Amino acid sequence: MLTLFAAVGHAQYITGPVASGAGGAGRASTEDGEQFIHNPATLVDASQGSTSIFYSDGSDMPGESDQYYGATLTDNAPGLLCSGAYMYVHRVRTFQDLPRVTEDYHELALGQYAWSHLSLGASFTYLRSVVDQGDAYIQWNGNLGVLYNPLPTLGIAFVDYNVMGRDKAVPMDIQEVNKVAVGATYILMNDFHLRADVSEIQVANPHHLNEYQLGFESRLESMLWTRFGFDRDEYFNLTYWTAGLTFDGPRLKADYYIKDDAAAAGVYMQGVDLRLPFW
Image 1 (spheres, helix red, strand yellow):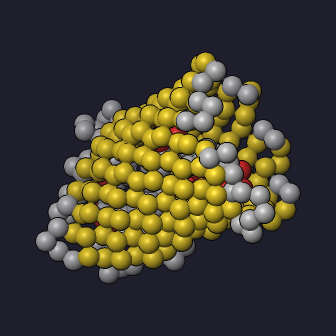
Image 2: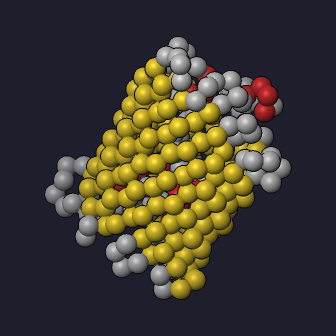
């Protein structure tokens, strides 16, 4: 199965460090600086203003390498027509079937309440990929999201990634492909949270193979959180175990994560970020 589908490109472009430490689950979570990366509808729960910088390095697939850094900016000030956010990512990747690829990615997200407990969001994306000693490819796309909070302790989400579909003129490894996901976050206690997502790639997936992501996080000290997670991707036949730490200061926040597939040597990712609310 890995041989059959390894050439299929990505759906969600990156995963934020907090969600990465919790098995990759985060469609219904609202951490400042990364919530809109997973679901633009979650912007309604962002701080009035925040920014973040992040860096990750490693390999998501056997025989590949991945390194990226970037920044986000979020604005949810009172009186705005919509909450808004922007992300920039610079990324360098290698593949089994391609030489090195250098990418620049931009995402602009908007979110707003439709009803008292239901929010909607949309994001617009631009990706430029340059293959070493080869061509450059540009892909425009977008994501749609929904967040429903029936209880103060429960969030339920739906996200449709890359709704414009894939560009078949782009090499398969770097194509943006359509993927749908549902997720939930439950606050069991103020100091213990659970999150779970299920997603499915809509390209070359006749058997409807899914990705299952599960994570939990707990407060160790007043300003220290720890998290662990599990990620089973049937489509690529990979299983990750993840862990993460967060320093949750009064203003400055810092996150670290690591994820590893023990069954596939060299397949791991780790990363850090710094998040700073303005208000």
